[in-house]
Length: 253
Image 1 (spheres, one colour):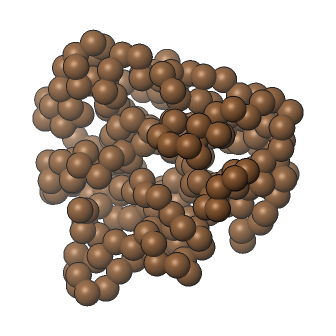
Image 2 (tube, one colour):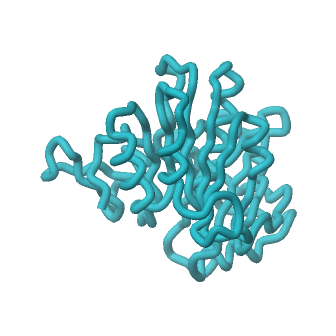
Image 3 (spheres, one colour):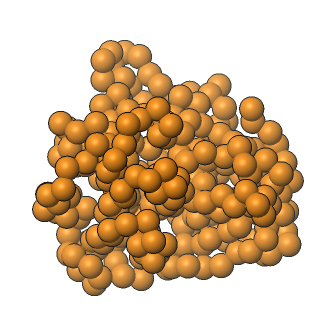
């Protein structure tokens, strides 16, 4: 059940170019699941900003979000300081249904700001004894983050568009050279990346998480709909029915 809370910022640091990690305290942090997001209100902005959950510490009752400056809203959020309070609605959206899956080896594929929710997912998978292989894509070396954290979960491969770090190219270039069979893949990132990944892994079972600007965040305004592959005349709401979908459930455009 969604709850609106005033939540204290426990820490706030820049971890890569224009990319910030924020740790927030909430008494319901333990309810947050991999793939879900929180909806943050910003002074001077009518619409809240959806931000994916990157980690949860149930003992400290905190959760972590990571965001990148894309516009005036996220720029305003980046100016927040430790000790400030944010107006947050949580938890929002669907989660990766790993509790229902038979998994021995999972492939995680993240791109840019789509990487954060996959860390919390990978952490949960490892806790369940699942082998985790991560393929992460960034535009350039200055934007790479959480590499060491992912290495604590399993094998990690990094691609940068300009070749300044890791392998030059895209995540699909790396995936094509992986030989170990997987049971499921889980991916989050820009739509073109998700299109390429789902096409490349069309014979594999998997789940994707969509990045999208949202209006209300609760499914009433229809600002973030995506058509179904089975019937393009019907839509799913990313904020309510997603952001996590079965890999071939929706049309990516």
